[in-house]
Amino acid sequence: MTHGKLLTWDPHRVFERTWGTDVLRWELELVENGTQLTLTTWLGRDVDIAKDATAGYHVCLDQLIELLDTGIVGPLEDADVHRWEERYREAVAAVQTIDRDVRLR
Image (cartoon, rainbow, N blue to C red; front, side, top):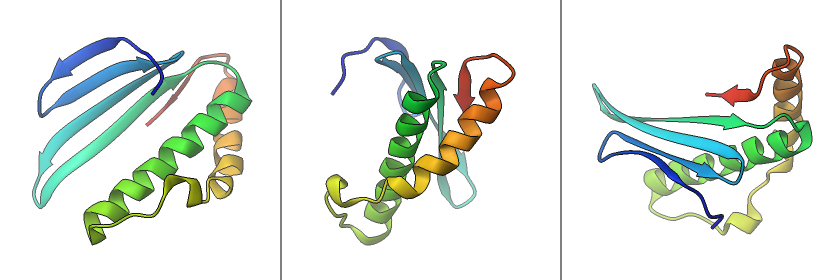
């Protein structure tokens, strides 16, 4: 795991930390049929790094869903991250055209 700094810790509600140059914020909210997880990440300005990171986060969340739904999950190395990279490259590039750091939610 990459070293980082804990920014917010509110058990059962919010966990926010740095991961390299990224900031990751995990929020849990009770909803009618369970709990909703919202991941917000603030990325730097490098499109290649941002699209790789966001694609990786997407794959991790896909695996979390699989684990919660089935109780088992395959190795992370077997996940297909490439299908998400182009989608996130376009999204990150679109946000960066307004000259801001990337925030995806």
